[in-house]
Image 1 (cartoon, one colour):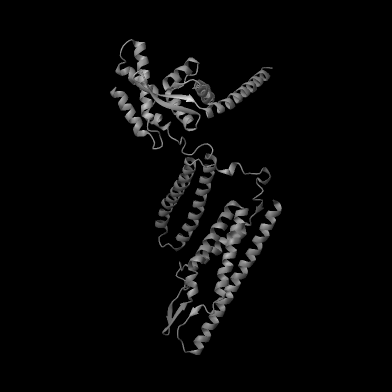
Image 2 (cartoon, each protein chain N blue to C red; image 1 turned 60 degrees about the horizontal axis):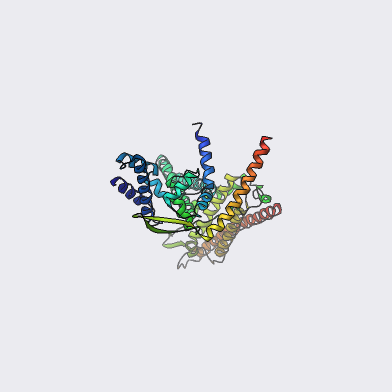
Length: 317
Length: 112
């Protein structure tokens, strides 16, 4: 019976944690009955070969053990269509984000070839990470038996109605270019003198504190805007989620710009007694304020357009 | 290769009626081996790798009860249908009879 003990030991090793304790006892009973049956047929003791054939008939230990597992599929037929779709969307999103970030890096890179070499490995790494994340999410959903209502809660009347407004390619391109330039300038990637401080005639000149406070919020708004318009260029249509995102970006930008407008000054001079220099920097503050107003104007125009789009989409539905 | 397709389809068909067959058979008490033998004698050959996990699953679902008993110097796990199992069986039997009638209707219609 060494063969049988060996076999059952292998099955035990493969059994998952959620299998019952007495599975091995039950399998042993089943094998012993088969061996006894074989002995009745052959009229004597079942030899080694006969027992091996019985075990072969039972199946490989891994296959036998896995049949007792609560989870029979990594991702079952119920969830698989949604998993496949989520995976496709995620990979496309990674491609878009990675392409945009890479173009930005290439524009400031001293060694184009060296940075190009890193593109593929960087992209593959990001894709692998996203694939693992999406797969693990769906494996968990399968394990906990979660039912996704995606395939239950749909209305034939609303199919394909969400994306009937074609997006302007010109609009998308101009927005992407504007966002890229703004990102480059805001983050001083080209060494543009936006951050200061610098010294002129022993005067220590520095940007206002508020610029540093708003550094990351502005970056977040610009990156979200860039992704939204890059996706719009790719998909060619305005959808409800995209419009909501655009509206949120507009509102966030208005809040940030309004906050900036409340500032009394944008350039700190420190203690300066020279009246002409004070006047000069007073003009600079005025120019910056006007520039902020202009940007705010463009953002308000965008907001108005997006509200019009939202109303138009609602009318279609 | 040609025989593989019908065999696969036959397997799928049989897989669908296994639960019904097992519940019906377990109106009488059986242990694993005797259950398999009884099903085999009735013309339904089912391998241990399918049968044993199936009865475990049905027990976890409350459709069967089981207990370990010693019989002939061997410990055996005896299964029998539970009250809940009997109710589910009635539902399945009704469904099976309905499906049977439907298939016969379709087959008769197809012949004409």
